[in-house]
Image (tube, rainbow, N blue to C red; front, side, top):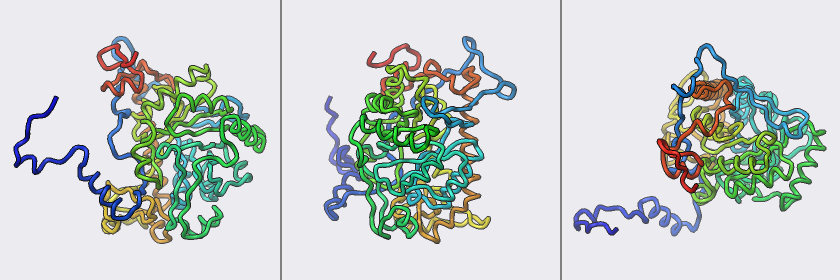
Length: 451
């Protein structure tokens, strides 16, 4: 139905829906430079998310557990299919792969310390394993990416599991980026690259082109680690149902699905905002694939991409995930987008540094520049000192602890003695879109759109 005519005075102030200020700025920037935009973090537009789901807490038909008297177990086993030594975690919340290069060495050490204190794992990311990370992480996952930058069989054996990365939620089908300002002498040496030159990772692995080749690669990785270590396969969320099935057929112990709300250190804006499917839809398709193969209890599922709160974790587990991986949330816990940073016990202002980047705290996405005002996503020898490992570790530990407390609180409210007993029956959807994507009834009804 057409809208009523607008008076000339009001129309002169009306913004176009198709060509709003952001699109006009994009076109003008493209026409002036002939370049696409590169930035960090994840999608900024609103997408269907776990916020669109709600729990059905216990009352008459279900009995809740007493929070201070009755235990709620969070122990999580990953890699039980083939590995001789599955990964055992105290909580189902892991730290996602973020490279040394994207992050400073101090940050990698802080993440390792926090993960160890909470009994969970952290992940290397592209560019290899740093000594700080291995020493501080009790449980460390070693990524095998298309670039093979810094890939070292000796480091592979030192890891507790291997994650073969096929794709990333922020850029499915695209390779990674590390701009020249972050290629420090140490990063260049680890990746065998020239200093100060932009680095682009390959978008696909150089030694295989399909699931049959991947099966051979997984067997190679198992042989080099004497079948001790679990093998994860990580995919960016696109054709999730088929990709998960192929990962299982290739021999994966664990499948990691990264939704389009996942972040990155640097990629094209068009990838971040316009490629992939929301995490909410990806979880359901991944679980459907495992159930279709009758592998739900044999192959574990880790979900990532926009996980922020304990409620998000609980909803992901209720939908069928075994664990979650968090990247951006951990960066914010470290101080990303904070107006201040802590140095030698003093809180110092970072406001001027945000202004130099043309942004403000809370809206910064300049991870790719290497000029992070709080020392998180940088290789600058001065800026990286703004993140002290012990301070960062404490903040991340507190964040993970809070998430786990919220997770167990919600599980008890649903009458569960184990967070892995949460199920889709405990959830309802608040919007038609979320109901259709998640395969969960719309609140107050038994209706799942499309069924």
